[in-house]
Length: 379
Image (cartoon, rainbow, N blue to C red; front, side):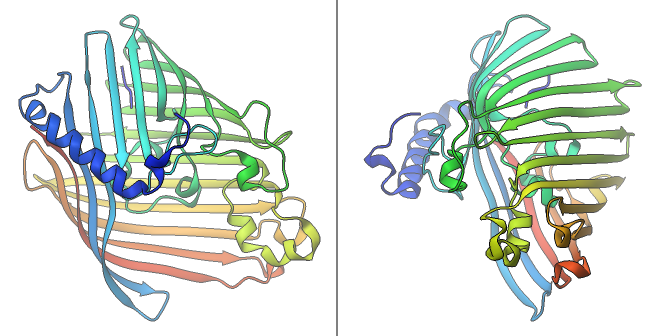
């Protein structure tokens, strides 16, 4: 099959230092085991890393910098032929526990799973929600820049999952998770907490024509504050040929409260005039297309386009007020067989435009990156 708390105490007084100590202890104790581990053994360790040098072209003035974009330590394995687990921690984020689930936002995975049969599996703990789309499915390490929709979407949540694969080419997943790491009253000060702050997800993953056409689709609803919901659809189709792949994703979200926050940030002047602390009845949609071509051994050429809109239905000046476009591409080089290490040169371009009624000014955000991405297996 395809798978992707406790009370506060003084250990969280200095979260980054404590996390560093914990990782050091784990690596010291278990690295010798990992070095001798088999690929499907009980203990496997991965380092996920993305770093680069950037030349910012817009907004002006131009600037340059070195950046550690992401660093995550991962441990996973099969304890028996039925029992498996996965742990992944972001080392670039603090260990402060969420006020709702008591997991750190830096914890991607802390889950254990059980293969009840060849067709049915269950997972519990903090895990990646089973939404649709192929940009969503990528390891965050290998994403140059997310669409606006996925950039702020909180996708790692505590919950329980059931995955059913009636035939090898079709998988259906049902999932119930928390809808946020934190209580909504901590974020949305003027709203009451939901009595059942859960998110409900139905997911379908498909494969046709011997894996040449793949599908990832889901519908979901999340209880936000009391009486307020977020409803969304994510999906995509991908064509996979031996040396060429292309996917197209669609995402749409209907929020009773501005969950992602773009409209609230953009339209603060309307909120200051009495519309409330946050916008309500917000609709956002996204389209993403990405193509890749392996034109020579060890080389990959890629291009990606994005188009997104945001509207606030109850505020005339903010109706269909925001449009953003992404245009990016690059060249990747894989120097070593057996390790997912790539060096790259990429252009990342974004343009943001706004309706005249909103009073907001268009702007661009462009940069050149020279860097590396890797998911190294320590063995």
